[in-house]
Image (cartoon, rainbow, N blue to C red; front, side, top):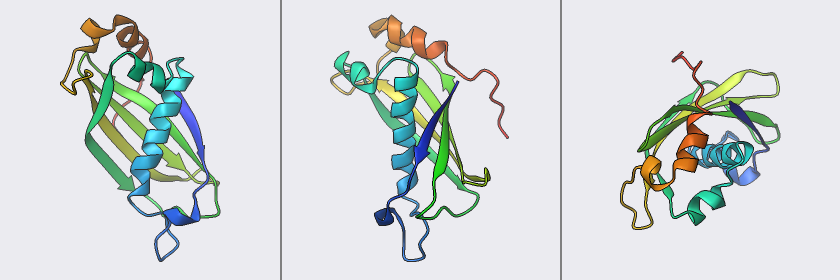
Length: 142
């Protein structure tokens, strides 16, 4: 499953060259993960209310083309790997001409309310089962 987030960059997200600053992509990725959870019927607040947390342990960004203020972008978020302890999301951002401008990937680990790694299958089977059935099984590294 791919979740679609429409992004309209804010002026404050640009650098002196008018290009979206590299630090902004991590924020956009988070927007995509939250939207992904909404789209599969599991709002992020519900995950946290269950006592679970997700902590980022790895983040990758590949800049294909610059992104600018004043344009709209489409970000597709996919869950490409999932286990009892970790999950990996992939992000693809396209400009208005449907050109790929950015590829990202983030790996997150499940934590309990004491911020210790936890096995989500043991702590919340419903959440485990829901994410498991939405993994993009067709994903192949490009």
